[in-house]
Length: 290
Image (cartoon, rainbow, N blue to C red; front, side, top):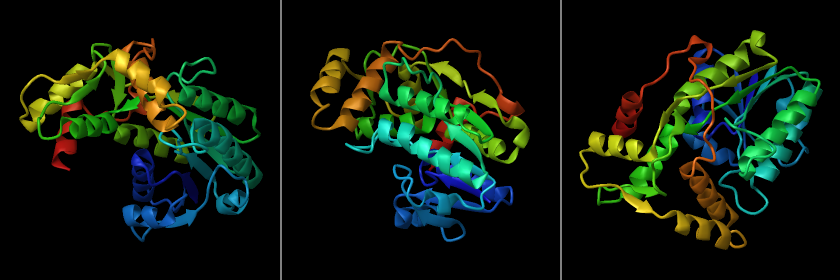
């Protein structure tokens, strides 16, 4: 059996689908079991649990040969942000997996570092460190930004105008990858013990946010130049919203970091594990069709 924590999110549900297609028995660990069942259906075992508390985690991962962590607190409010979920929550999950004798596949982030300007990247780095120090066999997967996430954001901000809103200037190259490609790597890592002790970086291809917005417009037949939210506004929101809505502040801070090149990573794009990669046109076509 393989346990997938965070199995109802964008990446998690794709991982669950991939593992099920491989004939694996999967147990999904989520905070909202009702919502997860509505997303995953009745053929997958869904259990309620919260990685922020060690209580009950040992029982939930008992019997697993591997535990996949696809949790994140990027959009979490007070008490459910990256420190609580990605750092401390992953530490609890790793400790429970170690006690159960299970391997761990941790979904981190490309560019994770204790010195990162972004809270999520620091929290993921601390989770990686905890996992490496543990007694359990491990594999770390580091993906960049998901194409599907940003296509959804650009679509939502376009509204009826057909002109997506770009956060900042939109001219800095950013690495993007399909969540489906990351799911293929994660499910492979969960089932292939020869990948233990490895860090798998799913680099993706560099693309500016303006290029992505225009590709989306072309696919949908939208016209007119994309709109822009100035960097000064992003800076103001990142600071002003912090005491009121930390998740919103976090989003603006991250958008600013992406636009100013703070997340530029010097790494060669790789066809990780020899798995086929989806092209931008394929991803957009699937996104528009759905």
